[in-house]
Length: 486
Length: 95
Image (tube, rainbow over all chains, first blue to last red; front, top):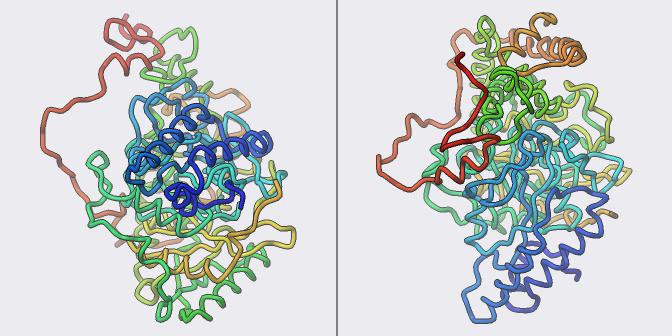
């Protein structure tokens, strides 16, 4: 078996047993990056020298009989919105070019404490605003299954890197589907945890009531391994919830008999690709054959989710991004005539079109005279969307839907029409508004060999059950083992 | 409800973003379409619904007020486009 094909769990075990070395694995990933990343464009920075020296240290540690940690010597890629002391972090935006993080994100600290090695940072839509990774200041990331198509977004780089075997796993962030939608479009597993499960300390903020960090990998087991490591309370993020530690990995492998899988009728409506619909239907049948009960549920306010999201997320973004004013860090427009000129030109020159559009929309819905009509209204509809899930979960344990209404679309296809781009997140957005966890796992291919993703949604802090169902489905199929041609 | 070019100019000023003539034109059309789509929310009766700002039942999370180390000033000021004598430097504010 090729080293680049190893999952995180397999790699960690082989390194621990000294059947392979961290150095060989990291070298294999670096060679793979060198071979394919000019085409894929997943990485904006590769930490070759440091990764190799950390791999050497991990191998020494094991050779000396040191206790191998869970991710000892395993390389991981991280999205360009996570801070690592001494490393640039830019959110793939010109406005943060040259910014060096003065502190390290909690999730990165935890990965390192578990022995993981950072191999590089990955491309994303500018400030995580987008569904195609086309708004990055560094240029495109391409879908490893068809390089004429987008990888999805905004964590397109993190997902493409895992799909193209450039890294066994990565971290992304998900505000409205930014982990799950690209995971679906690239044929890998990606999880958005419950709001409050993972500390966001060191994640550059986009929409604070929605943002979560989550893992991307090629197996559900890896997702569980990574979530166990990055999850849990952190005093530096007051929204991270204090809960007893969970053993997610050991709950995998259990039977899914007696579990009820809810299918919301509102997710099977017009606009869905018939091949996607068929793949989801087949996946439900598979889970039924394993003993799960399929039940009809309703999430009646689904059609209002995209509108609600684009009010709340842009309002929060307009506030969070006000800090990029050229004073404390990042880009400052040259030769300002006065303070106002400095602010206005810094933002004008530093931000790309989509970020400006969202700041404008967010500022508009918060402005005097429109606050009640848009922002307060959206917050009330959010309550209804949240209640939809509470009601549905009285009838079922997990909800199954498509992760995206279509497979990967073509590069450039939706760039000119922001509303069409927003609607590509139609199946992932409600989950962030309700704060529940959800995972996308591969569940088939279209006739032109593009991956299709199944989204499974759990109760608040229901990650254990969610991962158990996802793992049971995965172990009955081999979609996750298929490899792109790139 | 249509967004006018004047609205776009007003909001851009609030957001402290300078827009080109082309951007003003583009945003007027695009934001109109988006706001028209968002107006869909008006179909719902939310008279007796409480707003959700945040899905967790958290309020005013406190920590002990203890002195602890923080990032040192110099390493933060090093990131500033302009700094002098321990301060951020910006164009003159008061004449």
